[in-house]
Length: 147
Ligand code: DAT
Ligand code: MG
Image (cartoon, rainbow, N blue to C red; front, side, top):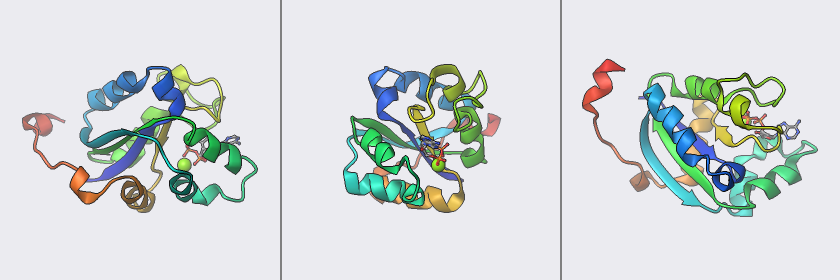
């Protein structure tokens, strides 16, 4: 089953939106297989956002993501990478549609509440950057056949 790395960013934790975001992902039908509240180190943040190292906002991005605790998660489900990005909403706050997490709750592109892996390759790298294999839980849900 496909897995992805999703993370409530420091603004979402501070604003008390962890529960709201988890609820939306659960309601969609995805299965939570790992989660922890944690503070990211500068090295971990720079690795996580390495694709953006040459962008003008890279420094701000690393400062922001390390500015407070995040809620790091691994979710699984059919097409979870693409479908969870749809639930998140577009990166640019002006394009994030109502009904999405960013569209409903975010005012600024830099503070957009949630991170989600954008490909199977980045999902593997990001899961490994934040979770040890033994931190992921394998379990079956009887309701899975109805999803
Ligand atoms: P996403 O988080 O939707 O995968 P991304 O990978 O392109 O988006 O960028 C990572 C984060 O960097 C994004 O969540 C917010 C920030 N960011 C992206 N573009 C930005 C911009 N033009 N100005 C400021 N911050 C930006
Ligand atoms: Mg991205």
